[in-house]
Amino acid sequence: MFSLIRFSDSEQPNEIDVQYIMGGSYLYSSYPCPTLCTIFIIYPTSPHIMKQKISITISDRLIQAIDEIVDNIYIRNRSQAIEYLVQNALGENRTAVILAGGSSDTVLKGTREYRMTAKLGKSTVIGEQIRKLHEGGFKNIYIVARNRLLTKAFEILKDGSALGVNVNYIEEKTSRGTAQTLHLLRGKIKTTFLCVYGDLIFNKVRIDELWNSHMKRRPMTTLMVTTSSTPSEKGIVEIEGTKIINFMQKPRKSDVYLVFSPIFVSEPEIFEYYESSLEVDVFPRLAERGLLQAYISSIKEFHVHKADDVKKAKLYI
Image (cartoon, rainbow, N blue to C red; front, top):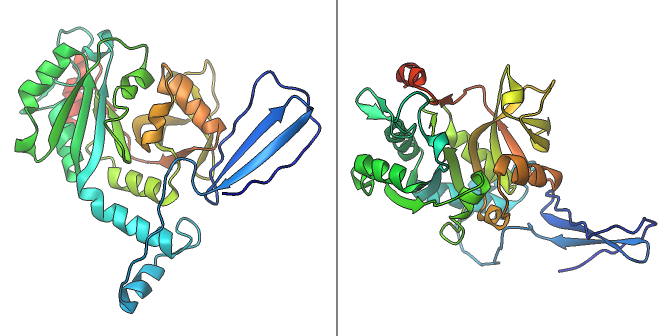
């Protein structure tokens, strides 16, 4: 590890400012100090992914094939190419999270039925979610919800083995928001994971492309982004290239029509952000630190919030 220190005139801050900026696999931190200077430290390697150096022996033909996927943009060298290929090979045992926390938010408006377990003909919302995840190679699935909803979900899914997956049920007792709900998985998930919200139908979404986009760039979190004619009702994102430079949840007015769809891929380091809401607290902070990327999709998810949505969802699947 090495450091680069630079001093510059600056007013004394009230607190230490630590910024994380991804790019070129380094961690950049600035520490304003009480002597009217700023200390800049650069650490090599990614800030949130621990790596080990190993030695392997493979054939010349394989090396040539590996080198062909180095594009000097997302995959910059042979080591990254091998890591990318291994990650894809392990994809058959990917981990996914279904967030369905909260009490009143999980019920279909005008009914006593839960959104996640609402019937869609012979299937259910959660059944369609599991089927789509299984198709994408997600075999290890966590569902986070209140006790009654978990009970309903278990009646449909059991342990998931009949559907080709392993379902883990995590009970939420109280929560002030999506970040606290997600935080219940800290220590349980130790690898890259996909997260979807419990009221979504996303049969047509290319979750493989979302996953691959994240694995190529390896930010802390990659959000699926779509367009909306009513951005003030959602979380808007401002993007430079693929990097999200600003995230704002439900602004009063907005001339930005790119919005967060409640599907994202993340590294487990996101669990270290113990805040109330992903949309209000965590995502804006990650954007400020350069750790939030966007995957722009022309295909949108479908939300099941009220009884009429159930009828429309049947057409979506």
